Structures are given as C-alpha cells and as structure tokens.
Image (cartoon, rainbow, N blue to C red):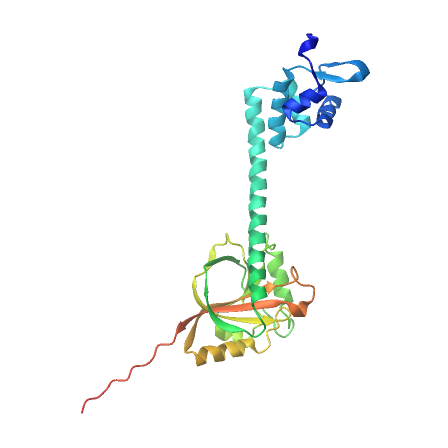
Length: 280
C-alpha cells in the first residue's frame, strides 16, 4: 500500500464531511474499517474508501439501518438495491403521511386558537366562513331516561372512530341537523364530527350566524335563544345544520370553565312579502 496516498482520520473527515467520531464508530462495527493503523493506533484511510463512504452516506440519508448497509456492503446487486429502495419508499410514504397529518392537525388547532382568542363570551355576529371539510360520525341514539348526558354517545363515537377512519387527534365538534333541533337539545348533538380537512363532508362557504360561549362542553347558557332572537331581529332565516366547535379546549386551557365554543349555522335574508298596489 502506498503510504503517501493514505489520509489521516482528520483529513478523511475534513474531506468527506463525516465526523471523526462517526468514522471511529463505523470502524468499530466493521462497516468501514480503517485501511491501516499507524503509530499510537491512529487510523488511516485510502482515497478509494471515499467511494465506499458515499455508498454508506446515501443509504444512511435514506433511513436504511446500519446493519442492512453492512450486509449489502459485502454482497449487493442492482436487484437487491431495487428491493431495498422499494422497502424504503413504503416507509417514507408512511412517514410523509404522518408528517402531513401532524402538520394539518397543528394548522387546524392554530387557526381555532387564533379565532378563539379574538372571540368573547356572548358575541353573536354574521361571518363569512370558508369552505370546511370534516368527517361525520354515526347518528346518535339518546335515551333521555336512562342516559341523561351526552357522554355515552361520545364514547361510542370514539370507539367507532378507527373503523370509520376518523382521526380523533383533530378537534371534535357537535353536529345538529338544524337550528330548531339545536334549540331544544343544544347539549345533545345528532352526530359528532372530526375537523379533518381531508374529510368527504363539506360545510359550504357562505354567510353564517356565529355565536360564542365560554364554558364547559355542552354548556351554552342562553346563547342558542339569543342567536334565534338575533336572527329574528335582523330578518335572517336559518339554513342547514348547526356546527359546534370548541376553539379553546383542554389542548389550550387547563380550566374547563374557560373553554370557548363557536356555534355556526348558515343564514339567508328573509324574503319580504310584496303588497300589490290597487289603483282606483
């Protein structure tokens, strides 16, 4: 071996960008043994080992375990590499999906929190809301005599979430078929839903009457009645379902009495009746 062509571990590290501690570890596990040892047991490498290290670096960056890289370092072929890369593609697809989902959950909560911070208890107003996707759960079946609370149906919703492919990491809301039903039982939604932006259910963009209430789940005080009064005073007609979303919940606040919910329902102006003028 031409001693003049050898590179010290320091020079080899500087040239390749791989730390000396990593090179020592690769030597210890037999992944990239040093070409020779000098005085004081110093490690030396050949320029050819830069090619071997590049092979290792590429697979490490792709998430391939070092044990698998070591096995293929001894015996590899284009066919074996295709199989390995295909396996890594599957793993990375799963990781990308998880990252996209995590990003989406973060974005959803951040938008809810920002909106919740701008609201105050008892606020009622007409807002222009964007289109929103969600995943709707099963129809709730309340037994008002034996089960006076909403917890049983919420538990059933959660238990069935995996089968229905509902991601419970997203905020969960209450869905009421219409405003008249909501007024009679505001704390017992007809269904629950997940604010999954990839859901097949859509709340259309448009004008909504939105009310805000501070308090624990299912506690809305007289807000539903005040929303109905507001609509009447402003000649508004309720259209479609009512959506209840807790903008500030246990993810954001410790005290349940400080939770902030929004109640939204589409509205349109009431048509004014026309009187025909009779000419004498």
